[in-house]
Image (cartoon, rainbow, N blue to C red; front, side, top):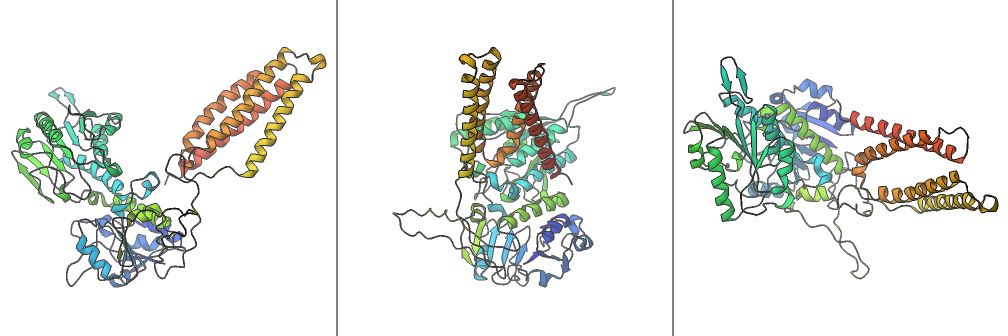
Length: 545
C-alpha cells in the first residue's frame, strides 16, 4: 500500500501530515511512503530527513495518485489546481475535513468515488484518545496563545520585587476549559500569572483548580455539558449572568484567552465590544475561536487589530506556529488511525470499528456522515441481520473476517474483558480443594482433636489467605485492561505489606508450618514487586525518545 504525505498549499499552513520520525515508523509497519517534494520544509523537515527515514521523495502528481493520501487541511477546490481532482478514484483521503462547513468539498469528493476519513470527526471516547487530532492541536493552541499574549503584553507575567519598585503579576482570564483552555491555564500559571478560568461545564472546575487556576461561576444553576465533551448553547438568563461576570472581570484582568466552540455552529460571542472597552489600555485578547467567527465581537479572523488600546489577536494558525511538534503529534494520530484500520497489510474500512465508523465521511463516494449507528447484534427471533461490509481500499489485500465482538468491558470502554476460561475455573477449584484439605488436616489432624495456639493462628491466616485469592481473582479479572497499570501500583503496595508481615512471621526459631508459610509469602510477594517494577519501567521506556 502506498501512503502519500502531500504538501499543504494554504499560505498560512506550515504543518505537514507526518514528521520524519512518524514516517520511519510507518515504513517499518509495511507502508510504502511517498513524500511530496518540499512537503516538510515549512516545518523544518527537509526532504533528506524523509529519505533517511525510508520514504521516497516524489513530485506532486505522483504523490496524489497514492492509495492513501494524508494531509492536514481539507483539499482545495480552486479551479485549475483543485487538490480534490488530483486523487484517483477509489483512493482514501485522511485529513481534517469539517464536513458540516465543507459540504461542497464533500460533494465533489463523492463524485470522484473517494473514501474520506475526517481527523476532526474522531469520536471522543477513551479508546480513541491516541487518535484525537483535535485535542493534539488544541493543546498546542492553548500553549501558543499564552506565548503570543506574553509577546504583546508590556509587563512581566510573574510579580517582581526590585530595588526600582514592585511590579504586580499579570492577571489572565481563560474562557472555555477544554483541552486548549486547560493548556493555556497551565502555561500562564507556569509563567507566574494569576489565572482565572470560566466554563459552562461545572465538571471541569477540579481540572482548572488542579492546574493552579481559580474557577469562576455564575449564580444560575445550569449545566452546559454537551455531547462528546463539548459545551452546549445556554439559556438567555445564563448568558446575561455570564456577560455581567465578564464585564466585571474585564476591569481587572490584563489578558483574555477565549477558546469556546460549539460543534457545527459559529463560535458564540462571549467577549463583547463593551468588555473590550472596559479593559485597561495595553491589555491583550487572544481569540482561539477566530476561524469559526471568533468569541470576541471585534475579532478579525487571521488578523491582529487594536481597539480602545487593547490588542485583539485573531490568528487562525496557532498550531501551525509550532509546526514541528504539531506535525509530529498529528502524524502520530494518523499512524494510530491507520493501525486501527488494519495497517498496510489488512487495510480496510470496517464500520464495526467504532473509531472508524465515527470518523467516516465518505466510502467509495457514498456519504456516511453523520456516522451511521452501530449494527445490532443478531438474535434468534430477529432472523438474519444485515452487517456492515468492510470496504477495502484498492489495491489493499482483501479484508480478513472480523472476529465476533467479545463481551464489553464493565466500564463501557477500553478493550473488551474476556470471561474466565474453563481451565482457569478448574485450576481455582483445585486450589480451593487443596486449601480445604490442608485446613481440615490442621484443624482435626492433631491427637485427641487438640489444637495448639500457633495452629489456631495459622488456620486464621490460611482462611484469610484463601479468601483473598478468590476475592482478588474476581475483582482483578473484572477490571478493564486499560486500568491494569494503576492497579499494579496498588498490588505492589499490598505486596510490600505482605513482605513485612512475612519477615516478622519467619523470625521464629522453630521451623514449623507457620514459618514455612511466612517464607513462601515473602518469596511470592517479592517476585510480584520485582515484576511490577520491571513492567512499569518497560512502559515508561515506551514514552522516551
